[in-house]
Each structure stands twice: as C-alpha cells, then as structure tokens.
Length: 479
Ligand SMILES: [Zn+2]
Picture 1 (cartoon, protein in one colour):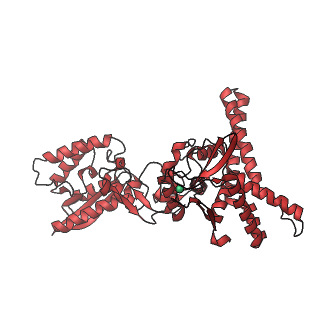
Picture 2 (cartoon, rainbow, N blue to C red):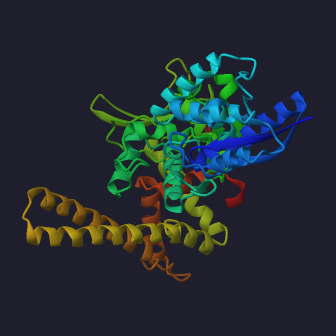
Picture 3 (cartoon, helix red, strand yellow):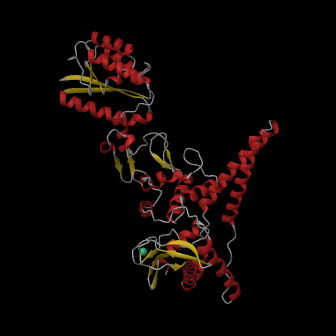
C-alpha cells in the first residue's frame, strides 16, 4: 500500500472550517478508492496561496527532503498547492527530484499527464483566478450553508454573524425592530406607513440607510426569522437552483413565531389585504386587521367613504364588486366593537384586563432601546457642537437640528414608557369611571398605535358580516 500525506489550505477563516472538512472528505474518498494510506495531514489556514508564507506547507517540503516513508502528496485541487505559477513549478520540480508525486484528487491530473500539460494549464488558471477577488467556490458555500453558517454579505436585519463560529446570533435591538415590522404589517400598516414610522424614530436598515417602502418585502419573507436556515433561494446566488437550495429547520434562532410568519405570508399573497396605502382621510378601526369578514364571499371588508345626495357615508364594504352583501356603517360598527371590548373588561375581573390594556404599550425592552438611542443622539450632538465651535458649517447646523428633533421624539417615547399609569377609579365612582371608559373607547376607535391594533386583533377573533346579521366572535382567552 502506498503511503501518502494530504495538504489542505483554505484562504479565509470563514470559508475555512468548511473547506477544510470538504477537502478532507474528498481526499479520504480518494485514498479509499485508490488504495492509499493517509499518514498525515498538513494544513494552512487563513493564508493566501499567492505568497509562500505557509508554515505547514514549508514543514511538508522540509519533511519531503528528509526521505520520508510517504511518497505521494494529495491535494484537493491544484489551487491548494499554489496560485503562483512560478512558485508551483519550482516546488513541483523539487518534489519530482525527490520522487514524490503530487496528485490533485478532483482534477485527475497526475503522473499520467507526463508532459504536465494539463497541470500547467490548471496552474495558469488558478494563478489567474487568484487575481480576481472574492472567488468563493460554490461547493464551499453550499457546505457552509449546510452548517447554518453565514455565507457572506450582510446578514438579515435582526442578526449578527459570530466572528468565530460564523453562525448567526440574534441582535436584540434589531430583533425588536423586525417584530415591529411584522406586527405593523400584520395589523394593516402599509409599507410607506411602516417606513415613515421607523424613520421617525431614527431606525436604520441593516445597511445603515433610511427605510423605504421597498425595504420590507425581503424582511417579511425572510425564513430565517422562524428559525429556518435557507440558502441559495435566489437564482442569482446559484448556478442551479435545485442543487443550491439548502434548507435547515431550526438552523438559527427564531425571532418571529411561525403563526405570525404564516399570517404575514398569507396577507402578502392577498392583494385585498388592506395593506395598501389608503388615500382616505377617515380612520377605520377595523381596517387591515383581517377580522372583518364578508359572510357571502369570505373576503375581508375594507373601509370606504362616499358622498351621496349631500350626505357623507363611511362604510365597511366587500371589495368584491359582484358580491351581493350590503356594506355596514363603519362608525356604528367601530363603536359597537369598542363597547363590547369595554364591557368585556368589566365583566371579567375588569381591573386586571383594563390595567393590562392601559399598560400594554409599556415594554421594558423598548424603553432600553429608546434610552440607548437617546444616548447615541446626545453623543453625536456633543461632537457636533464641539465641531461647530471650531469650524462654522451649515451642514453641521442642519444635522444638529435633525438630531434635536430625534432627541425630542425619543424623549417623548421614553416619557410614554415611564409614565405613571392612570389609576382605575374605585367602585362606585361612576363619573370617574365613565371618563376612563371614554378615554379607552376613543383610544380603541381612533388610535393608529400598533399596540392598540394588536390588542383589538388579539381580542376579537372574527366579525362575520352577513346580509342581515353580524356575528362577533371574541378570542376565547379574553371572553
Ligand atoms: Zn363579499
């Protein structure tokens, strides 16, 4: 049995772990089929093949000179040997003189290629390839992806890449942002509205830009958010879509529940989802929540207003023009639902539920996020003020103005989070109680706040509108 050694080399640490395994796998396969005994492995990591500063490689050459018991060196491919043609030739000449063969296990050019013609061609090819930057082999990427390691580029919003393991780790403040985007979309906010809100609170995309209406499609369809590690989804990422697709369930930490993700996908595929930017001046409490259903055709009713004979009508109606269902008065229905929700609190150990509603917009994680942002804004302000003291600049002044707007916004949000919650009046104080009820009713009907929308969506399961009947189904947990 012939004895051999293997030489492995990988260029970047990230590719490395994987390439290393892949190369080993191929070399062992070759040994098995060619009846070779693998004695030892020399491996260099994080070294570019272009220069020869490869300690393991030099160690192997030294060992080769000392008349070792092995006489074959196996490589994954010739590019592992060297990407510099002259260098490769010099070493190969030396090894030939020592009677040591160099075999590429994937390219099938060995001693049977006596003139070394093919080898020279390949050497040239690799030397050329090395000049092009960022050539990561397709096989390598595929293997990286199978280990759920990040395959390059920016990771999705909500994740960072662990520099040592190459795995995705959750970035808490960005994950909060991802949740907000999913919840906003799922309660009927349009893309432009989500962008406006996020830009208002100074949030940025993963690339550090402002959000635009185009920012969200990729986010809302990102399977990694439910823990499914997917690679090679887009045709431009792979030569062959079928071959490229890597799917690993629970391959990364989930940020969004599977239920919410599924709801959002369904909503995205439905053009009548109520997420389109409405030109209407009216506010509809139930618009876009996908709870108000047409009993005739199953579509979701949407808010519409029109003027007829001098009267203004504000209605919820079926988007299907051919549908025979009548539209319902929006104001009446909104009031009715708000009253039912209010009654629900008082029938069911009212205080806890009511307190929960009042405090639903308070979230300690969010408070932290706002406080961190405020610190950042204040630091930038300080730097700018110092700069302005030395060099007067209009641009810096504008920037300072923008920063103080952001500061005011963040301080408002922090105050909201820290606010002392309104006290629920004692039993018997009807007047005070009515005031609280009015305030909550008004909030339920007119607020565009995400928390209020989420609350309504969670409390009301469905409102089925039939030609002569409206059936309201409340969520079981709350009723
Ligand atoms: Zn209908």
